[in-house]
Length: 199
Image (tube, rainbow, N blue to C red; front, side, top):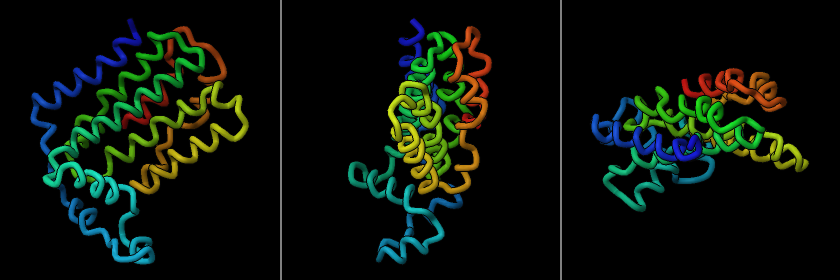
């Protein structure tokens, strides 16, 4: 039941976003700085004001939709996938379905989803890349030497490439380690990193 809700909740959020007009792309003050990213050479790209992640995302979107209308839906999809990975990590750590779902729900309908999904800026995508970090730090990942640091490092690197300041909000801290080290009956201790990551 809880597992089914974990898959159905994002669809409800998508319906709310569509019904409130939040799946219409919105140009912000910083949008043009991502669209004008300097692709002329590698040194120019490295010297650009923006890191390469979000401009690359916009380029990829242009391949399927030059109008950019798909950007909000794709940003919602990335956030939903990230929340599912977080949920899977809690379940793999031994948390029961309902507490794991309670800890994940703030991610499905977080402030970043409601406010940033329509915006053509890096915030929504950057926050999304951090959410899987606790998931890949769960005990099953830690049993294979080098695998979980590599995965956590990859997601952190992707976050940096999309939006550098977001790295300071990593949910992979002491609260998660204490959560994954024991089974929780109420899920209270595991909800803290979710709330912190949700923003």
